Amino acid sequence: MESKDLEYVRRLRRCGHLLYHKFNLNGSQMRILLVLRDAPMTQKQLTDRLRIQPGSLSEILTKVERAGWVEKKRSVIDRRNFELMLTHAGREEADRFEKHQSEQAELLMQPFDEQQKQQLAALLDQLIGHWEALDTQNTEK
Image (tube, rainbow, N blue to C red; front, top):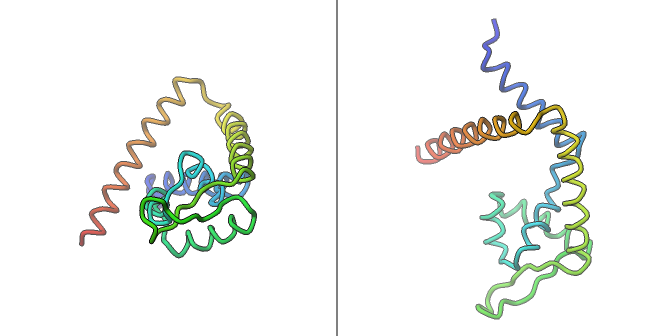
């Protein structure tokens, strides 16, 4: 007999699958653009902020540089480092993506009223906190 907890986790997995594949809200490249829209940063800072592996970030950065959305410039603070910054085209692409995400989010959350959305957010925050604590415990072992 299947446990209820396994059933809940499978539902969460299904939600993630739909968000990623059907509604294209994964956007690794776009996440980089949205973060860099706030301020230029080094590749290390971006890796830390996005919590992804340096190799994965390098691969994604190659693509966004080829698209003309991001450029590397030598840091004025520390000439040994490069800062990543958005180009004008990158800023426009980030704005388009954010608008698309907002429209998708409104559509996806239509079944809930405001109180239900707040309850869902609180439950998800609690779950994320628990999972992050478990991840920290596993890392320390």
